[in-house]
Image 1 (tube, rainbow, N blue to C red):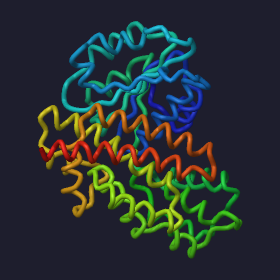
Image 2: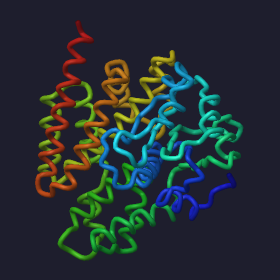
Image 3: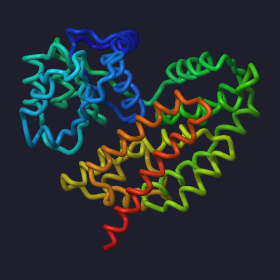
Image 4: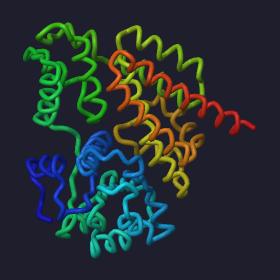
Length: 348
Protein backbone atom coordinates (compact mmCIF):
# COMPACT_ATOMS: atom_id res chain seq x y z
CA UNK A 1 0.00 0.00 0.00
CA UNK A 2 1.22 3.52 -0.71
CA UNK A 3 2.34 5.83 2.10
CA UNK A 4 -0.68 6.97 4.09
CA UNK A 5 -1.47 10.64 4.45
CA UNK A 6 -3.31 11.99 7.53
CA UNK A 7 -6.55 12.16 5.54
CA UNK A 8 -6.10 8.52 4.49
CA UNK A 9 -5.62 7.49 8.12
CA UNK A 10 -8.80 9.23 9.23
CA UNK A 11 -10.73 7.63 6.36
CA UNK A 12 -9.47 4.10 7.08
CA UNK A 13 -10.21 4.44 10.79
CA UNK A 14 -13.76 5.71 10.16
CA UNK A 15 -14.63 3.42 7.23
CA UNK A 16 -12.33 0.40 6.91
CA UNK A 17 -11.65 -0.54 3.29
CA UNK A 18 -12.85 -4.12 2.52
CA UNK A 19 -9.76 -4.53 0.33
CA UNK A 20 -7.48 -3.88 3.32
CA UNK A 21 -8.23 -6.55 5.90
CA UNK A 22 -5.07 -6.16 8.00
CA UNK A 23 -3.74 -2.89 9.41
CA UNK A 24 -0.54 -2.46 11.44
CA UNK A 25 -0.52 0.28 14.10
CA UNK A 26 3.00 0.99 15.32
CA UNK A 27 5.07 3.69 17.00
CA UNK A 28 6.35 5.05 20.31
CA UNK A 29 3.02 6.58 21.43
CA UNK A 30 1.31 3.62 23.11
CA UNK A 31 -1.80 5.68 23.76
CA UNK A 32 -2.18 6.63 20.10
CA UNK A 33 -1.56 3.02 19.01
CA UNK A 34 -4.30 1.92 21.41
CA UNK A 35 -6.73 4.67 20.42
CA UNK A 36 -6.33 4.22 16.68
CA UNK A 37 -6.51 0.42 16.77
CA UNK A 38 -9.61 0.58 19.01
CA UNK A 39 -11.26 3.08 16.64
CA UNK A 40 -10.50 0.81 13.68
CA UNK A 41 -11.89 -2.26 15.44
CA UNK A 42 -15.08 -0.49 16.50
CA UNK A 43 -15.66 0.82 12.98
CA UNK A 44 -15.05 -2.65 11.53
CA UNK A 45 -17.50 -4.32 13.91
CA UNK A 46 -20.17 -1.66 13.55
CA UNK A 47 -23.20 -2.36 15.73
CA UNK A 48 -22.32 -6.01 16.34
CA UNK A 49 -23.78 -7.26 19.59
CA UNK A 50 -21.80 -10.50 19.49
CA UNK A 51 -19.58 -10.70 22.61
CA UNK A 52 -17.27 -13.03 20.69
CA UNK A 53 -16.88 -10.72 17.70
CA UNK A 54 -13.57 -9.38 19.05
CA UNK A 55 -10.69 -11.81 19.54
CA UNK A 56 -7.50 -10.75 21.33
CA UNK A 57 -4.28 -12.54 20.45
CA UNK A 58 -0.70 -12.13 21.60
CA UNK A 59 2.13 -12.71 19.11
CA UNK A 60 3.68 -15.49 21.18
CA UNK A 61 0.43 -17.46 20.81
CA UNK A 62 0.68 -17.15 17.04
CA UNK A 63 4.37 -18.05 17.09
CA UNK A 64 3.53 -21.22 19.04
CA UNK A 65 0.71 -22.08 16.62
CA UNK A 66 1.43 -20.59 13.15
CA UNK A 67 -2.03 -21.50 11.84
CA UNK A 68 -3.90 -19.83 14.69
CA UNK A 69 -4.20 -16.38 13.10
CA UNK A 70 -5.53 -17.76 9.81
CA UNK A 71 -7.95 -20.07 11.65
CA UNK A 72 -9.33 -17.18 13.68
CA UNK A 73 -9.58 -14.93 10.61
CA UNK A 74 -11.60 -17.51 8.68
CA UNK A 75 -13.81 -18.70 11.55
CA UNK A 76 -17.53 -18.36 10.87
CA UNK A 77 -19.09 -15.75 13.21
CA UNK A 78 -21.43 -17.32 15.75
CA UNK A 79 -24.13 -14.71 15.18
CA UNK A 80 -23.15 -13.61 11.69
CA UNK A 81 -21.77 -10.18 10.89
CA UNK A 82 -18.18 -8.99 11.09
CA UNK A 83 -15.37 -10.13 13.38
CA UNK A 84 -12.19 -8.40 14.47
CA UNK A 85 -8.86 -9.70 15.71
CA UNK A 86 -6.61 -7.50 17.84
CA UNK A 87 -3.08 -8.91 17.66
CA UNK A 88 -0.51 -7.48 20.08
CA UNK A 89 3.14 -7.78 19.07
CA UNK A 90 5.53 -8.53 21.94
CA UNK A 91 8.82 -10.31 22.34
CA UNK A 92 11.20 -11.10 19.49
CA UNK A 93 9.58 -14.13 17.87
CA UNK A 94 8.65 -13.67 14.21
CA UNK A 95 5.11 -14.32 12.96
CA UNK A 96 5.70 -13.03 9.41
CA UNK A 97 4.70 -16.39 7.90
CA UNK A 98 1.34 -16.24 9.70
CA UNK A 99 0.74 -12.65 8.53
CA UNK A 100 1.67 -13.55 4.94
CA UNK A 101 -0.72 -16.52 4.99
CA UNK A 102 -3.63 -14.24 5.94
CA UNK A 103 -2.69 -11.62 3.33
CA UNK A 104 -2.43 -14.31 0.63
CA UNK A 105 -5.88 -15.61 1.56
CA UNK A 106 -7.70 -12.67 3.17
CA UNK A 107 -10.95 -13.21 5.11
CA UNK A 108 -14.21 -11.78 3.80
CA UNK A 109 -15.86 -11.04 7.15
CA UNK A 110 -12.97 -10.37 9.54
CA UNK A 111 -10.52 -7.52 10.13
CA UNK A 112 -7.12 -7.72 11.81
CA UNK A 113 -5.51 -4.89 13.78
CA UNK A 114 -1.87 -5.52 14.67
CA UNK A 115 -0.36 -3.31 17.39
CA UNK A 116 3.36 -2.84 17.92
CA UNK A 117 5.87 -0.42 19.37
CA UNK A 118 8.49 1.49 17.41
CA UNK A 119 9.55 -0.32 14.21
CA UNK A 120 12.51 0.58 12.00
CA UNK A 121 11.91 1.17 8.29
CA UNK A 122 13.56 -2.17 7.52
CA UNK A 123 11.57 -4.15 10.12
CA UNK A 124 10.05 -7.13 8.25
CA UNK A 125 6.54 -6.59 9.60
CA UNK A 126 6.50 -2.90 8.72
CA UNK A 127 7.96 -3.52 5.24
CA UNK A 128 5.39 -6.23 4.53
CA UNK A 129 2.39 -4.15 5.60
CA UNK A 130 3.59 -1.03 3.79
CA UNK A 131 4.19 -2.90 0.53
CA UNK A 132 1.24 -5.32 0.37
CA UNK A 133 -1.91 -4.14 -1.45
CA UNK A 134 -4.13 -5.86 1.10
CA UNK A 135 -2.50 -4.34 4.18
CA UNK A 136 -1.94 -0.94 5.73
CA UNK A 137 0.62 0.50 8.14
CA UNK A 138 -0.32 3.45 10.33
CA UNK A 139 2.48 5.15 12.29
CA UNK A 140 1.65 6.48 15.75
CA UNK A 141 4.16 9.08 16.82
CA UNK A 142 3.90 11.64 19.61
CA UNK A 143 1.29 14.21 18.67
CA UNK A 144 2.39 17.30 16.79
CA UNK A 145 0.94 20.69 17.70
CA UNK A 146 -1.60 20.28 14.90
CA UNK A 147 -2.60 16.80 16.13
CA UNK A 148 -3.00 18.06 19.69
CA UNK A 149 -5.11 20.99 18.55
CA UNK A 150 -7.34 18.67 16.55
CA UNK A 151 -7.89 16.41 19.56
CA UNK A 152 -8.49 19.39 21.88
CA UNK A 153 -11.00 20.86 19.44
CA UNK A 154 -12.85 17.54 19.20
CA UNK A 155 -13.31 17.37 22.96
CA UNK A 156 -14.21 21.05 23.26
CA UNK A 157 -16.84 20.68 20.52
CA UNK A 158 -18.35 17.68 22.30
CA UNK A 159 -18.67 19.77 25.47
CA UNK A 160 -19.86 22.93 23.72
CA UNK A 161 -16.82 24.85 24.98
CA UNK A 162 -14.16 27.17 23.61
CA UNK A 163 -10.72 28.00 25.01
CA UNK A 164 -8.63 31.15 25.38
CA UNK A 165 -5.46 31.33 23.28
CA UNK A 166 -3.15 31.59 26.30
CA UNK A 167 -5.01 28.74 27.99
CA UNK A 168 -4.52 26.54 24.91
CA UNK A 169 -0.80 27.33 24.95
CA UNK A 170 -0.58 26.33 28.62
CA UNK A 171 -2.51 23.13 27.96
CA UNK A 172 0.01 22.18 25.27
CA UNK A 173 2.79 22.22 27.87
CA UNK A 174 0.94 19.75 30.12
CA UNK A 175 -0.11 17.08 27.60
CA UNK A 176 1.16 15.43 24.45
CA UNK A 177 3.43 12.49 25.33
CA UNK A 178 0.62 9.89 25.18
CA UNK A 179 -2.62 10.24 23.19
CA UNK A 180 -4.91 8.42 25.66
CA UNK A 181 -3.49 10.29 28.64
CA UNK A 182 -3.81 13.59 26.78
CA UNK A 183 -7.42 12.94 25.78
CA UNK A 184 -8.30 11.90 29.35
CA UNK A 185 -6.84 15.15 30.69
CA UNK A 186 -8.76 17.26 28.16
CA UNK A 187 -11.99 15.41 28.96
CA UNK A 188 -11.39 16.00 32.65
CA UNK A 189 -10.85 19.69 31.89
CA UNK A 190 -14.11 19.85 29.92
CA UNK A 191 -16.01 18.20 32.77
CA UNK A 192 -14.50 20.70 35.19
CA UNK A 193 -15.55 23.62 32.96
CA UNK A 194 -19.04 22.25 32.30
CA UNK A 195 -21.69 24.89 32.87
CA UNK A 196 -19.53 27.65 31.44
CA UNK A 197 -18.75 28.40 27.83
CA UNK A 198 -15.03 29.20 27.80
CA UNK A 199 -11.92 27.67 29.35
CA UNK A 200 -9.25 29.95 30.77
CA UNK A 201 -5.86 29.53 32.44
CA UNK A 202 -7.43 29.25 35.90
CA UNK A 203 -9.50 26.27 34.76
CA UNK A 204 -6.43 24.47 33.44
CA UNK A 205 -4.41 25.11 36.59
CA UNK A 206 -7.29 23.74 38.66
CA UNK A 207 -8.07 20.67 36.54
CA UNK A 208 -4.86 19.67 34.75
CA UNK A 209 -1.44 19.38 36.27
CA UNK A 210 1.28 17.26 37.77
CA UNK A 211 -0.38 16.90 41.18
CA UNK A 212 -3.43 15.17 39.72
CA UNK A 213 -1.21 12.97 37.56
CA UNK A 214 0.77 11.83 40.59
CA UNK A 215 -2.48 11.08 42.46
CA UNK A 216 -3.76 8.96 39.57
CA UNK A 217 -0.42 7.11 39.33
CA UNK A 218 -0.64 6.36 43.05
CA UNK A 219 -4.13 4.90 42.59
CA UNK A 220 -3.04 2.83 39.57
CA UNK A 221 -0.02 1.33 41.30
CA UNK A 222 -1.89 0.63 44.55
CA UNK A 223 -4.62 -1.26 42.71
CA UNK A 224 -2.36 -3.36 40.49
CA UNK A 225 -0.11 -4.26 43.42
CA UNK A 226 -3.09 -5.44 45.49
CA UNK A 227 -2.92 -2.63 48.06
CA UNK A 228 -6.71 -2.44 48.13
CA UNK A 229 -6.94 -0.12 51.15
CA UNK A 230 -4.45 2.36 49.68
CA UNK A 231 -6.27 2.29 46.36
CA UNK A 232 -9.65 2.88 47.98
CA UNK A 233 -8.33 5.94 49.81
CA UNK A 234 -6.61 7.29 46.68
CA UNK A 235 -9.70 6.67 44.51
CA UNK A 236 -12.02 8.41 46.96
CA UNK A 237 -9.62 11.34 47.21
CA UNK A 238 -9.59 11.69 43.42
CA UNK A 239 -13.38 11.54 43.19
CA UNK A 240 -13.64 14.16 45.93
CA UNK A 241 -11.31 16.36 43.88
CA UNK A 242 -13.72 16.08 40.92
CA UNK A 243 -11.57 13.64 38.97
CA UNK A 244 -14.07 11.41 37.10
CA UNK A 245 -13.86 7.68 37.74
CA UNK A 246 -13.39 6.97 34.02
CA UNK A 247 -10.15 9.02 34.08
CA UNK A 248 -8.74 6.70 36.75
CA UNK A 249 -10.11 3.66 34.92
CA UNK A 250 -8.53 4.87 31.68
CA UNK A 251 -5.15 5.23 33.40
CA UNK A 252 -5.46 1.70 34.79
CA UNK A 253 -6.46 0.38 31.36
CA UNK A 254 -3.36 1.99 29.81
CA UNK A 255 -1.18 0.45 32.51
CA UNK A 256 -2.73 -2.99 31.95
CA UNK A 257 -2.08 -2.62 28.21
CA UNK A 258 1.54 -1.78 28.96
CA UNK A 259 1.76 -4.74 31.38
CA UNK A 260 0.42 -7.07 28.70
CA UNK A 261 3.34 -6.26 26.40
CA UNK A 262 5.84 -6.07 29.25
CA UNK A 263 4.81 -9.43 30.71
CA UNK A 264 5.07 -11.08 27.28
CA UNK A 265 8.60 -9.70 26.92
CA UNK A 266 9.40 -10.87 30.45
CA UNK A 267 8.17 -14.39 29.69
CA UNK A 268 10.29 -14.32 26.51
CA UNK A 269 13.40 -13.78 28.63
CA UNK A 270 13.81 -10.00 28.78
CA UNK A 271 15.02 -8.58 32.10
CA UNK A 272 12.46 -6.51 33.99
CA UNK A 273 14.79 -3.52 34.31
CA UNK A 274 15.47 -3.61 30.57
CA UNK A 275 11.74 -3.56 29.88
CA UNK A 276 11.27 -0.62 32.25
CA UNK A 277 14.20 1.24 30.72
CA UNK A 278 12.75 0.95 27.21
CA UNK A 279 9.22 2.01 28.19
CA UNK A 280 7.77 4.91 26.20
CA UNK A 281 6.72 7.29 27.55
CA UNK A 282 9.38 6.85 30.25
CA UNK A 283 8.24 5.66 33.67
CA UNK A 284 8.92 8.16 36.45
CA UNK A 285 11.80 6.83 38.58
CA UNK A 286 9.75 6.80 41.80
CA UNK A 287 7.26 4.40 40.15
CA UNK A 288 9.76 2.05 38.54
CA UNK A 289 10.14 -0.37 41.45
CA UNK A 290 6.38 -0.75 41.78
CA UNK A 291 5.93 -1.30 38.04
CA UNK A 292 8.68 -3.94 38.11
CA UNK A 293 6.68 -5.79 40.78
CA UNK A 294 3.52 -5.52 38.66
CA UNK A 295 5.27 -7.17 35.71
CA UNK A 296 6.39 -10.12 37.82
CA UNK A 297 3.04 -10.35 39.65
CA UNK A 298 0.47 -10.41 36.82
CA UNK A 299 0.25 -13.41 34.44
CA UNK A 300 -0.83 -12.71 30.85
CA UNK A 301 -4.18 -14.49 31.18
CA UNK A 302 -5.16 -12.40 34.23
CA UNK A 303 -4.08 -9.18 32.49
CA UNK A 304 -6.27 -10.02 29.49
CA UNK A 305 -9.30 -10.70 31.71
CA UNK A 306 -8.77 -7.44 33.58
CA UNK A 307 -8.52 -5.51 30.29
CA UNK A 308 -11.77 -7.06 29.03
CA UNK A 309 -13.55 -6.31 32.33
CA UNK A 310 -12.36 -2.70 32.39
CA UNK A 311 -13.20 -2.15 28.71
CA UNK A 312 -16.76 -3.27 29.38
CA UNK A 313 -17.19 -1.24 32.56
CA UNK A 314 -15.90 1.99 30.97
CA UNK A 315 -18.32 1.57 28.05
CA UNK A 316 -21.20 0.78 30.41
CA UNK A 317 -20.28 3.66 32.71
CA UNK A 318 -20.55 6.15 29.86
CA UNK A 319 -24.11 4.96 29.29
CA UNK A 320 -25.07 5.16 32.96
CA UNK A 321 -24.43 8.88 33.45
CA UNK A 322 -24.51 9.70 37.16
CA UNK A 323 -23.82 6.06 38.06
CA UNK A 324 -20.61 5.93 36.01
CA UNK A 325 -18.28 6.18 39.01
CA UNK A 326 -20.14 3.35 40.76
CA UNK A 327 -20.00 1.09 37.69
CA UNK A 328 -16.30 1.71 37.18
CA UNK A 329 -15.63 1.40 40.91
CA UNK A 330 -17.14 -2.09 41.02
CA UNK A 331 -14.87 -3.26 38.21
CA UNK A 332 -11.83 -1.75 39.92
CA UNK A 333 -12.76 -3.50 43.17
CA UNK A 334 -12.77 -6.85 41.34
CA UNK A 335 -9.40 -6.12 39.75
CA UNK A 336 -8.01 -5.12 43.16
CA UNK A 337 -9.22 -8.40 44.64
CA UNK A 338 -7.46 -10.33 41.87
CA UNK A 339 -4.25 -8.36 42.46
CA UNK A 340 -4.45 -9.02 46.21
CA UNK A 341 -4.83 -12.75 45.52
CA UNK A 342 -1.86 -12.74 43.16
CA UNK A 343 0.19 -10.91 45.78
CA UNK A 344 -0.63 -13.49 48.45
CA UNK A 345 0.23 -16.31 46.07
CA UNK A 346 3.47 -14.61 45.08
CA UNK A 347 4.49 -14.25 48.71
CA UNK A 348 3.70 -17.88 49.57
